[in-house]
Each structure stands twice: as C-alpha cells, then as structure tokens.
Image (cartoon, rainbow, N blue to C red; front, side, top):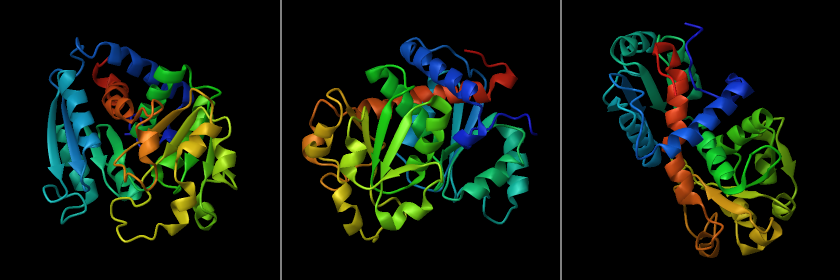
Amino acid sequence: MSGIRHFLDIDDIDAQKLKEILVNAHELKKLKFNPPQLFKGLSLAMIFDKKSTRTRLSFEVAFKQLGGHTIVMSMDEIQLTGAESIEDTGQVLSRFVDAAMVRMSDHDTLKTLSKNTTVPIINGLTDLSHPCQIMADLLTIEEKLGPIEGKRIAWFGDYNNVAHTFVQASEKFGFEVVLAVPELLRSKADPRAHLVDTPEEAAKDADVIVTDTWVSMGQEGKAIDIFEPYQVNSKLMNLAKDNAIFMHCMPIHRGEEVTEEVLSSSANVIYDEAENRAHAQKAVLAWCLEDVGVSV
C-alpha cells in the first residue's frame, strides 16, 4: 500500500511533485470550458464530518467536470469512527471507489484510514492541515503576481491548520511566510514558523496579506479579544507592496478578522481563490490517480 498516492499533508510530498501539480492546475483551469474527461468511469467518495460550502462544491465540480462520478456521505451515513473498525471501512471503500476525499477534524484518524485503503485518500481539511486550500492559494497568487518563489506572504490571527500548511509549503515552494500571532498562541506553532512581534512587522513589504476566521467551526464561544490587534485593515494593507493582494479561505466574519474597506478594495481576490479550489483539486486528483491511467 506504500505506493498509493495519498494527498494528506504538504510535508509528505516531494517538492518537485508539488510544483508539477501546481503547473497542471494552471493548465486545467485554462480548459475550464473544454475539460478533458480524465476521470471517465471513475468514482470519488466525499466524506464529511463538518458543514462545507467550498470543499463540497469544489471537489464535486472538479471530479464531475473531468468526467467522474461522486458519492457524498456524512459521518452519519458511514461507519468511519462508528461501530465498524477504521480498517474495515478503508478496505470496503477501496472495493467501491477509486479515491476518497475526507473532511474531518482528527488528522490521526485520517492517516489511519489511508493506511488501510488501496485507493488514494485526499485531505479535504483536518484540524492540523489543509493542503488543498494551500494549493489553491498558490495558484491564485501565481495568477495575480507571477511565480510564487521569493514572494512574501504575511499571515495574521490564529495559528490554525491553514497557517500551519502555509509554513510547510514555504519550504517546498521557496517563498517566505511571516506570521503575526497572539503571544499566547505562539507555542503551538511549527518550529519552522517565522513569527514576528507585531502585525505591522509582518505586513511590511508583503506581496500577500492573509487571514482566517478567528473562530473555526466547533470553536463557537471562543474568546476573540486577543485577536483584535491582528485585524486586517487598510493600515496594514498600506504597509504591504502597492500591488499586494488580500486572501481569506472563507467563511468570513466581516468586521472581525477583516474590515469591509479591505473586502471592497481591488486587493481582494477571495472569490478567485475560492474558485481555484476546484482547479487545484483537479490537478491533485489527477496526480493521485495517475497509477490507474489518468494523465494530464
């Protein structure tokens, strides 16, 4: 099973392979209105333990545009983490579908599932990692600003799964990510993370300003006072480069992590970023399924 191409974590995948996936994402986006039927006759299971707008839409559209069939299941509809063992669930999945996208909280459960399947498992989001989001973000940055290598990306707010995956990707793709995170939360950051003391220091000369919701799904009731100095506003944007872009993986709490002024500015590329989930994931899926004959 070791040769199966899972897409669980940026750290697990060779830098050259990741760069090839990103190049293919650009090519597949160009074919948006004339999509090659790469996945004809193939099936993708999509398993969710959280509500989803962009992950559900982007994976379903991506797989269907390229000719495949999708099956959507919530945790209430599958035995994963239920009465059946993860091992049995993984083996049964492998007999019915050609790949599975799983969006769930627990990263270790996802890894255990991947060790017990004979088909690729794609991480649609865990509490630790969000690799498909980052591939879409890099696609967006390259569309707007050119090659990602050497760019300065500034992150503000919580050190969450998206921030963590940006740190991983920075080593693979050769860009700089600078993080402005409340002092109380810095201990949970990856040792490779470049943490700075103030939001202003992070924003200085940045190519990309990025933030995320301060209260992730399942964290309702969490105190947000410590995040208020890290709000993305016009003051921070003005410290970045003149052509800097603003990104956010959504959903957005308007007026909390980002102001309406920034969202209404020409720097805002969040809807391009959202669409690019589909195109990046086409390339991820094509790479994962190459062993069954898929080629771009």
